[in-house]
Image (cartoon, rainbow, N blue to C red; front, side):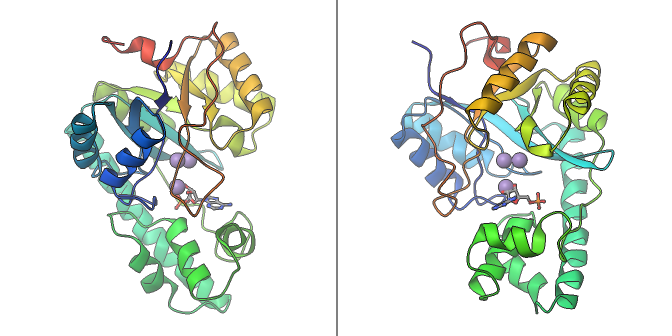
Length: 279
Ligand code: AMP
Ligand code: MN
Ligand code: MN
Ligand code: MN
């Protein structure tokens, strides 16, 4: 029997709702046996999560989800199984967090013009870690009564083309992959079907990603449906990429993404953990 892997989720160190410790407890109670915490542009939750995972007897893998600019697209690259103390990785992530702060100021300016007051201070109140995310703005919009739910906040204010949308200027693909690789880890394209890329563009991306040292695709993601899974499994076969698996769990209020509910990978696909010495 293969173990239950979940290699993509979030804690309060970024835009998740559970502390790293609570998240690990939640994962264990839902049957996860190998867990990676992959907060956006920050690794601050890893130490606490790793300690709790050890106490509870599950395997813990270091992780991060890096914001990348690729042409006009924003991509998420998950890094797994790296050394979190690596300097190039940490100074790179620190730069991204500063960029998040400046983007947050721009978002707030735009929201002010759209009639939403005090959103910068508001969003920052929901951010207990070192990153400011659109998720924090969404929570402010919800609690201040501007929208009915979080999805609505993205639909009306924060999503592409909406009044508060600022794409952000992140790191390039090659540089992000190099931070992960140089710190000893593997880079994986997170939820590849969520970027609205044509089949041609996705092939170009995977080719380029492989050339710069990328190793895998999220074939199974809580935010991808069954068809997407089959399609990504095909890409993994065709491009000889390893497959990763993750819920993208953020907490109870985003109820469509759950832990411990992921289907198994198809048998003929090499999982990303086959690259890890002791798996
Ligand atoms: P950012 O990295 O600051 O651009 O924020 C993106 C985050 O917003 C994602 O990681 C999700 O957690 C969240 N998000 C994006 N789209 C939606 C949506 N439609 N509904 C709820 N949360 C969303
Ligand atoms: Mn998120
Ligand atoms: Mn993502
Ligand atoms: Mn994520």
